[in-house]
Length: 332
Image 1: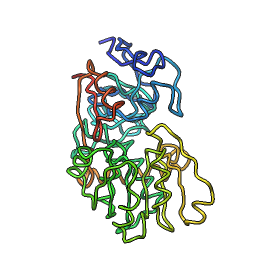
Image 2 (image 1 turned 90 degrees about the horizontal axis):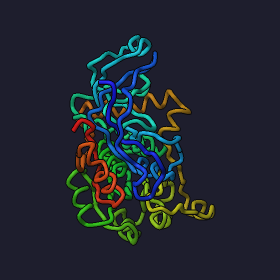
Image 3 (image 1 turned 180 degrees about the vertical axis):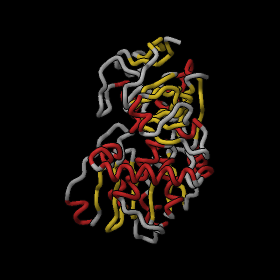
């Protein structure tokens, strides 16, 4: 095989018109790289934003989207082999781009062993969402068992990962979803103390559930009005974790509000945190790997579609129809 099929972003667009399936040359590994036969790639909101030019990272055109995938190593560079990687290994791979393709080339430092407890689809959905949730809740949020956590956008990929991880951390979780149907799906997947249909208008319900204290932790990938309201129900000494702005509006808070109410606003960039503090990044990856291997966390797959149906997968994510993660199967 000299070529492979891949999805290519050829032009930035709001309607996916700049994307097309193409034939690309088969990748070859550099010294410290491996080639992976990609069995599954999980889509996340950043993958959609990147096709529009709205993500903070803007790869040059054309590029193959897809930040996280899972598959089997088929070829190994000498440096990667020296590091212990061999053909046939089942792996999770992560990068800024390159996932929505039949084969991909990755530095061996971007690999993790795929736990036997997870399928390829589940493995593809593990790394980014759960890494974000771990850095937010455990590292930056300093979550303690028994604390109250509100997860906004709980039906989304990163939101549902936070709900799932919170169960393993012993938190009391209030899941917030935009519809009753999405909330029911979240409750079926993750053990939550309470569920609320929002995204806004939940302040009094949070205060009632927490006996007037408010939330010790708020996990917010939504922003906009959701963030504004969270400022009103975060507890004194609480931590409001800014994960993203899926609502489309970047909120602004006056410094007097966290001062008077005594809470912290903390920005969460899990990947950047790991790059700046590599030792901590390795700890985070190992922690997630251990929880997955022990069966304590398990990504929820909303749907898995073949590569030819890539547009259906992106459209479902754009239209907020996905609970958990949608996966594309490049060889399906």
